[in-house]
Image (cartoon, rainbow, N blue to C red; front, side, top):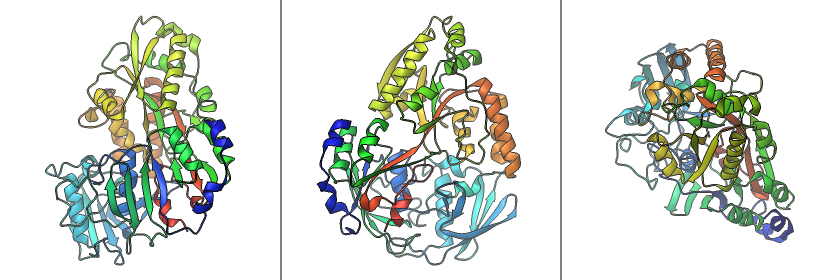
Length: 488
């Protein structure tokens, strides 16, 4: 495949040069969004698409992920449990309706309502109430101290009369983002620039094109038929693509975590010594340097280096001899779930071989995402390799590790039940002082190096392949696409 890409001609890119603004930018994606309703979307494609169509009170800085004003002009803390937000008066919904405080209040209540059943209800569970203060101010009161309220207010704001409406999987809900959904069908979502959204009007429309096969994606880019592909081309193909006139490859460190989850209700996975041995049998540095072509950093803990709460620590040991002393005594054959994507399958097989060399036989089972999640949520697995793609705040770990968030309540799929860990996660959630929170997460990281409830593997770069006219686009640290709206 790499040879084919390198050998192809250079002419097809001529019709996608900068200035061809009448033709939509084509953004490649690997799958259709599950839904375009921001109340229910959880998959990466759907999440990133809805954040182009809808806007929140805040947005996240593309580099630091700190909350920035978006629909809110600003805010002030009245006391540790009360936040007053001033809304912009220059923003209108795509329908032309002006943004009002009642829209914010209705949206926050809808996300929290059991009748709506939003998949993001946990994000607003710390909010006791929100009240209007005229048309352009809202006061949010917390039920308990909660450090991440501002980041949580990135939730998309809906029109008050639509906030409690039935699900709208086709994305028909009125939005405030820089794009409007023109049409949505299997394989394609067409977005056109909004007139009065939260950002200046984008210069060109966007088409999201679903291409499932990696080779087909690479060839579409090389042929000049696509403009943007984020994290969709294997590292081994990137050098050949970067050498093509009309294509560019850029990357940045990502705020994400690839990790191994273990079903801790099954022996011997309930033993921290066994979990540490699993970790010691994985050669992270080799996988990052080879299969990931140096575009990933071996994890030294759970929190990505790009986050403010990251605490530097020694490398996690690669010690297959020490691992064999523990793993070889288990006399158990295990399963390792992974996705059907070719690169992920290759990585899982390399990890499986490393575990076998250390005395543990593991069968790799590739599964479609929906099937894998169902098995994980049902506890029907031994080991699985997953990615937390958007680590926007270290508090997200609470949903993956706290004992209160075992499925269906959350994403603690390993069934972790550790009172010490729960206390650290709760402290990080309710402590407001940034320095105190940083110290809490440093203690959590040190504790987890020993407990190893999740086996951290690496943090992958955000990698984008672009055409000439999209060359200025770089995804944010968590991989989102809002930068499309700023392309010339």
